[in-house]
Length: 331
Image (cartoon, rainbow, N blue to C red; front, side, top):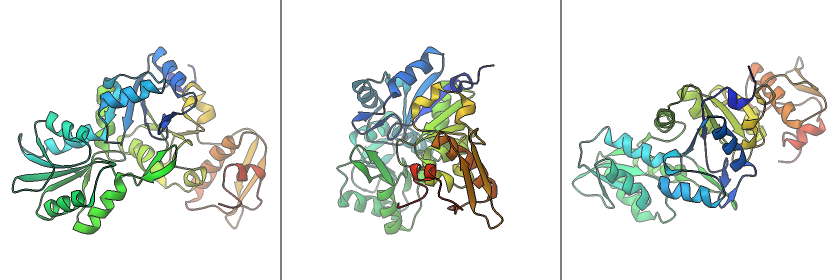
C-alpha cells in the first residue's frame, strides 16, 4: 500500500485563512495540491471559522486566487452557528445577529428571523466577525444576553491572519462580551465539534484529514472529532507553539505548507527521523545532534519532548537548526 498522504484519507478538510491563503494572497502550491487531491478521488472541503462571508463569496474569492472551488465545497462557522441556534429555538424566533449580512442570511435560511437590535422577542444572539461591528452592537448583545438570550459564537479565534499580519479575530470580541456579561457562549466553529462534524458529513468521509495552521482551533478541533490532522506553518502557530503543545493540540503530521498533502505520510509524521538524534539529559534538557531538514528535527523533537512532558524545552546545546526553527536565540 502506498504511503502517500492522499492515499490514506478520503477527504481533506482544509482551513482557509493561514492555510490556503493569507488575506488576498494564495499560499504557494495550494491550488495545485488541492487539484491533485481531487484527481486522486479525495473530497476537498474548505472549512473556515471566518463567518463574515457566504459560501458563494468564499468560493469566488478562492477562484479569484486561482484555487478551484465550488460553493458546495465550503463549510463556514456561520452555517454551523445558525444551525446550532436553530436546533434550540422554534421556527420564526428572533435572533440578534452580530456580524455581516451573510451571517444574517444564514439565520434566515434555517427559518429564524435575524434582527439587529434587542427587543422583547429576542431569543438568541449569534456572534460572528464583521469589520463594521461597533460598540453599540456589543451593547445590544450584552443587554440581550443578560436578559437570558441564548448566546452562540461562530468561533473564538483570537486573531485573523492576513497579508498585513495578525488582526483581531471574532474571539477578541467574544472576550469583550464575556467580560461584560459574565456568561459563556456555545461555540459552533473549531475547536468545537459542530463545524467539522457537518463538513465530514457533507463530504461523506470516513477517513478525513484536517489541515490547518492553528493548534488551538484546527488541530484541537480534529482531536475533538477523532480525525488525524496536519499542521502547516504558514499561519498562526509556530514551531515553538508546536513543541509546547498540550495533548489535545498535537497534530499527526507537520509540514511547511499545504503542498505536503501530496508527500509521503511517513516523512510528515511526528516521530524519530533519519539524520537527527534527539534525547533528554538527566536534568531534562534536550540534546540535539545530526544534520538534515530542520522540519525533520522538529518532528523528532516533538516526539521526544511530548513523551517527557510539556512546556518550553531547555536545550543543552544550541544547534543551528534550532535557530532556523525559531526555537533558540532572540524571539
